[in-house]
Amino acid sequence: MTIEEIQNQIVDEFAMYDDWMDKYAYLIEIGNGLSAMDETHKIEENLIKGCQSRVWFHVDLRDGKLYFEADSDAIITKGIAGLLIRVFSGQTPHDIVNANLDFIDKIGLTQHLSPTRSNGLLSMVKQIKYYALAYEGK
Amino acid sequence: MFDVNRIRKDFPILEEKIYGKPLVYLDNGATTQRPLQVVEKMTEYYLRYNSNVHRGVHYLSNKCTDANEQAREIVREFIHAKSTDEVIFTRGTTESINLVAYTFGEAFIREGDEIIVTEMEHHANIVPWQMLCERKKAVLKVVPFNDKGELDMEELRGLLNERVKLVGVAYVSNVLGTVNPVKEIIDAAHAIGAYVLVDGAQAIQHIRVDVQMLDCDFFVFSGHKIYGPTGVGILYGKRNLLEQMPPWQGGGEMIKEVRFEKTTYNELPFKFEAGTPDFIGVVGLGEALEYVKSIGLQEIAEYEHGLMDYAMKQIREIPGIILYGDAIDKSSVISFGIEGIHPFDVGTLLDKMGVAIRTGQLCAEPVMQHYGVPGMARASIAMYNTREEIDAFCEGLRKIEKIFKL
Ligand SMILES: Cc1ncc(COP(=O)(O)O)c(C=O)c1O
Figure: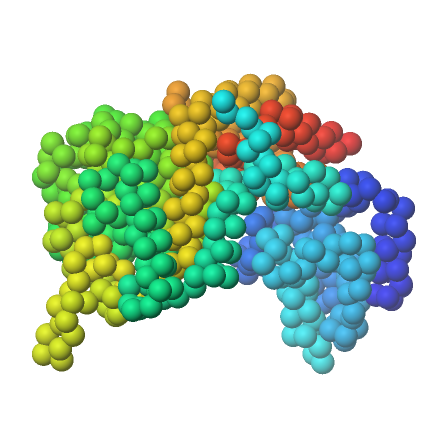
C-alpha cells in the first residue's frame, strides 16, 4: 500500500470513534501491540530529543526500503510511534521525504504537533524524514 | 465566612469548558489564576493611568509612582517586613534568587566557603548557587530528605560549620508538599553565623508569613503563584545585608549620580531596581495580596487544609497509586504515579477529561532521582478548588486505570 492509502485507512479507523477516550484507548492498544524493539537498538543515538517520555527510533534499509522500529516508556507516545511506523515502514526514502502527513490532522492529533508539545510527535516525524533524507539517493 | 462558591465567581476561567468538559484546574503549583479584581485593576491602569514611574513631573507619572509605592507597602505589610526599603521588585522567584546569588555572592563568598541547599529544592534554588560556587570556588552541600519527604535535620546540623555562609531552603516543596521547619533551620544557621534564604514560592499563597518572626535573611516569591500577574516577584532582604551587597544590573533608576569618573548608586530599594519595572504588574500584585487579605490567609489555610485531607484520603483509595511525599506537615501539593502507567500518559488522558495537572520532572530532577522515577504527575490545589473537583480528578484516575486494563 502507498503512504496515502495507509493514511486513509487510519483515518477511517479513527472515524469509528467519536469519543476522545475511545480514540486514546485505541492509541494505547496500538502502543501495546507494537512489536518489541531490539534492546541493542535502544541506544543514545536512537533517542529522540524533546519528549517528556523517552522515545527510540531505529531504522534499517533493506532492498531500497526503510524499516522502522520504535519504543517509548509512555504508552500514548508509543501508540503514536506505532501509527508512524505503520505509515512509513516499508516505504522508499523518496516517498517518505515527499509524504504529506494529513492523517494527523484528520484523526485529531494536530494539537500534538506544536513544537512545544512534550509528546514529541513533531520530533518523531522530523527524525523519520531526516533518516529518509539521509538514505535518499543512496 | 469562607465561601468557595463566592470566590469562584471572581475567577471566570473556572467556568471554562475544555473539550466540552468543565475545567478542573489542579495545576496551581505552576501558576494560579487571577481574580477579576486583579485583571480589572491592571486594565484600569493600562487604560487610564499608564505612565512611567519615578521620573515624571506630570499627573499620570505621579499616579503610577504612588500606586507602585503603595503596592510596596502592601507587600511589606503582607510579609511583615520592617521597612519598604527591604522590599525589592523583581521578575519572580527565579530572578530574586539569582540577584542574591550574584550580589550576596560578590560581597560575602570566598574560596572554600560553603553553601547549603536541600535535595528537594526547585532548580531555581540550586542552579544559581552552583553558578556562584563555580565563580568563587566555593562548595555546595546538600541536605537529603527521607522517603516520606522530610528533611534530615540531623544531617543538616552536621553540615553546619563556620565555613557555611548561606543556607537556601524551600518553605514548601513544589514536589513533595513538605512544609519544612524553616524557623528551626534559620535558628540553627544563625547560631553558626550563616545566613538563610527562604524560597517562599509555594508557601506565600498558603501559609501566613512573618519575615521578622522567622528572622530569615532573604525571602523570595512570585506574584503569579498568589493570584497576581506573571513577571513580578519579590525579594525581601534584611536592610543591613542589602546595604552591603553591590548592585546587580546597572542602568536608570538605580543610580544617584552618573559621572564618567565615578557613578554612585541609589538608596534601597531602588539600588536593585535598574530600568523600567513592570509597574502595572506591580500594581496587580498589590491588588492580588489585598484580595487574599480580604478573604483571610488563615481562612484560606484552614479551607485548603480540609481539602488536602479530603484529597489525600480519596487518592489513597485508588489501587496502584504511588504517592511521593507524605510528610506530617504537608501543603497543597500531591505528587503521584500509577503503577505501570507513565506520568505523561496520566496527564494526557486527564487533560482529555478537562483535568489540568502537571507532569514531568517538575523542575526538581534531584527529587526524581531520589525516588528513581523518570517523572511524576502532580495535582496542586488553590483556595478556589472544591471537593467535587477532587472527586472528578480521582474519577479520572480510575477511568485511566480502566483504559489500561482493557
Ligand atoms: C519552590 C519553587 N521555587 C522557585 C520557583 C520558580 O518560580 P518562578 O518560575 O516564578 O521564578 C517555583 C515555581 O515553579 C517553585 O515552585
